[in-house]
Length: 450
Ligand SMILES: *Cc1c(COP(=O)(O)O)cnc(C)c1O
Image (cartoon, rainbow, N blue to C red; front, side):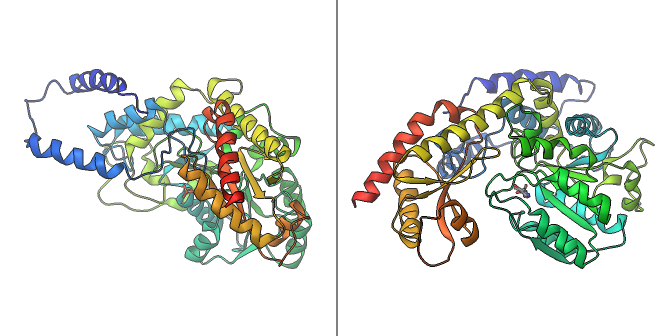
């Protein structure tokens, strides 16, 4: 499963890195290698207790292996362990972060920007909402019922009132529900989710921006999972229109550690107006003396941050530029094609009830059954039986209203339906689809006949 030849490239690059410090007197940190080796063996054994995330038969949650170049560049920079808080902690990696972030900003069509990497989508959204709190007078935040659960939590941290807006049958923010709330109260910020975590639903950002003209609020785009899909050529019309409106949003969040082929610990926040950097102003008695150039710590909520994350992202973007029609864009197009194909196959099969046509690469389906409680039980059982056959899926609680719209034939109590869910985030899923369907069919008939 793992390519071990890549470790040779790491060794070669490490020699080059070391030459940069050739003027120093020789120094080796003392290591007792026997116990180190033994302990690493123990770690490897402990790590066997994992689902096989990098394998195409892992088709469950939102997990995607980092690109080898990201993994190697990250490991290489660990020998320096730079801290991108300040230039004193990592000159090269700070420069690489500025370049990589500029690449992301231009992917979204931002003509100007202020931005940086951070720990995660959650922290990136926290920061964007914190800026929103300072940038205009009204604290009220709205996001859809399908928005990530951390928005409500982060609003609590920031003491900003939060309300959820209803969704349409596709799981997208409902514009009538939004306008009704805008008429009722003074709203400061609307969060548009471009690619919801559960369904991959894309809120109609272009229509939200039309309402902004009338009601005047700030627009933050949470594209933690879906953002890179702006590069592809096979989106549906509504999703395309939403992504095309991104340059007009006040702030954007994307997670390079979701679809951007990075190890965890890599989120990104972008502000369209660089002047909003003024909200970060602070006095630090220990840093920022080595240069009058911008230190990233002067424009970020967090202090210490891994320079390695920036190095890995920079290397990945060099190898796979963020361009429409490029290799990276093609790989996302393949993921969406795989999701459309899986959904079509499920719709053709009698054992399943397909959910909505995926806007990105997440597929949701129910088991065909006499009623909701039986369908929910079957989904649980298929989930377990599939895992027993090395096919790893995910489960999703589909709220009553969406379940009624998608599967009107599924009778029973008006409760949530437990459905099956698959994130086809690896391009290899496309080739492996016949195998995935075969294992799913075997798991389903095992359960149905039990
Ligand atoms: C994953 C996700 C988040 C949270 O990001 P983390 O990196 O897991 O903290 C926020 N919003 C959306 C839409 C997501 O998919």
